[in-house]
Image (cartoon, rainbow, N blue to C red):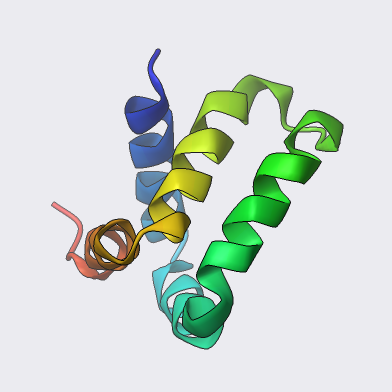
Length: 82
């Protein structure tokens, strides 16, 4: 399973549980420091207990690091569930 598929599944799961509004608010709050958090996530990645989601964490860090990626992540959370 590739990283984008894992991340898409995590986003879909958050939407199903009704966590999308909270995550959107969190993204709005961290937007100014998102690149710094992305770097921190890459540094902390080996120590995080989410070993089955390591590639998704890498993809998340890549998205947070770029403004276009950040907008894409926010857009995928804001989409209505199908």
